[in-house]
Image (cartoon, rainbow, N blue to C red; front, side, top):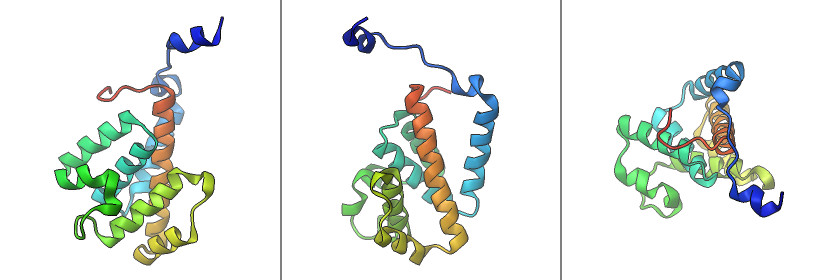
Length: 156
């Protein structure tokens, strides 16, 4: 079989939740524990931005819908990919610090800069910061699971 034949024929992908239910339930529990004590709107922003960076359509679709259900404005959702350039007042300084940290965690190959970490630490108490970091690594893990298994946006 040639390389072209391999890439042209989509491989059947496994149903992760059904195949490893114990691991899936552990991920659900970890995700719930990570969110504790954080503003739900902040969590959705971080999860949407991380999913954008990781090109995870499934998670982006899910978290955008969750954010809308929670009352998030269209303006904040639409401007999220360019939050750095968004007008003052669209995102709080605390949200901007969280988004900057989330972006660096998503691209961890270069590490997390002292500046991004210090910016977040200035807005979050230690426990809250630890939860934020946990949300960042759980959404990165969910992104990788759903990209690998080609989970379809809108699918359950």
